[in-house]
Every structure is written in structure tokens, then in C-alpha cells.
Image: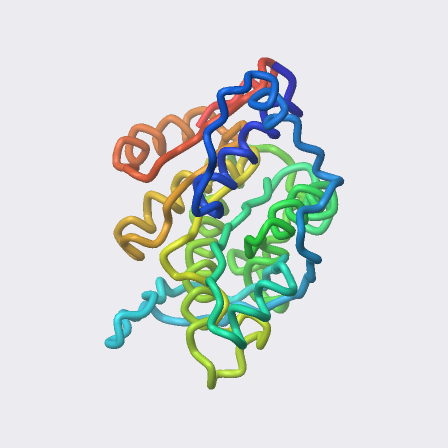
Length: 274
């Protein structure tokens, strides 16, 4: 099975799990086969806007109003792909709130900016079908140095990076997801206006490719405790952490604790290990 087919099937399952409230069964085998033939260049019914949103440094906090907990973490920045009209309707007219998908890029090979460009059709494809997509562009302060230097991808593969950067990236992703969902509920803190009141805090999913795929699994596992009931689905595409020993340690320690529905895929030649 080619990586393109694997990705198409993963995307179809993610849309069903995280975004579509209903799905009509079909007995027509040809129609069922056509359902997998997704063209990411063809948008859904909604125009898509993209914006950069700052993630603020914050301590962990459990709100007294029953809202989304803040997991706490370092600052950074995310790109948000969102369907323009449904977001406006949810915000202004009390329409149906939108599901939120956290998409994690790999850390190796390219910078996050390049990964975002490479995956732009996929991210836009999701958003055009009524989903808010959040993906990192930077982890940490621009002025950070040493162990606090910002992470923006483009790293060379190597175990020396994994044990320090993987946990840091993971903490940021969970922090970013919780902050976007929490601040979208708050109308008076200067948060990005188009998202205020538009996100359903109980319809989130995590998704990622390569290192991002492994992170999607472990962020969802951590969210079960830090943000119970919020993350409904996980899609991990060719997941790996870039180091066999560390990947096996993390998988043995954490994967069995995941109860969130998981779709994990890999192409025949990926050689993935998590």
C-alpha cells in the first residue's frame, strides 16, 4: 500500500471520528471505494483562513468554572487553519461549535515552516470541512539559548536530540492545545478574535506524521489525565521518535495506557518504530 493511500485512509477516518456528527452507510461497493479516493487539492465546502497565534507561558491551572484545564508550559507559536464561515457562525450566531485537530510535524529533516508548506493541502483539506487545525511553528522563546533554545524543526536525526527535545515538544503540544481551547472560551483576554466561542472543548483530536505521529499518541495519552474527556481520536502516520531504544522505552511505558481510539498507519518501507 502506497503512503498516499495510507494517508488518504487516515484522513477519512479522522474526519469521521473528530468532525462529522453523522455518516450515512452505503451498500454500494463502488461508492464505498470512491470514499477513499480523496484529493487534498480539492477543498471542502468552506473557505479557509490561516493565522499565527502566540502561545503564552503559563503554569498549570484547573479552572473553577468547569472549563478546559491549562496544562502549563513554555511559550511558542502555532498556525491555525480554520473554516471562515462556520467559525464566524459559531462565534456570532451560536451555531454548532467546531472540532479542533492538533497536527504535530516531524522534528527532523525540515523546519516546521517547510513541513507546514509540505502538508498545507492536508491541513487546508481538513479545515475546509469544518475543522479547526492547530499546528506548531515554534516551540520556546525566540531569545532562548542552550537547553531553552527554540525548537523549529530542521534537526538532524540522532539520539542526542531525542531525550531532551521529544519531552519538551510533547509538553508544548499539550500546552498549546489546552491553551487554544481554553482561551477560545474566554472573551476578555485579547485572544485571537475569530476563534473566540467557536471551538467545541469536547471534540478534539491529535494527528501527526513521523515524530509527530508518535507525539500524537503520547499527547493524547497525557490528555486523558490532564484534560479528561476532551480528546476523542488519534491518528498516527508512520510514528517514530527517531531512536529505537528511547522509542521502545516510551512505548512500553505509555502506550498501554491509551484508551482514546487510535488509527496508526505506516507504509511498507517506512520502518517505523515508536
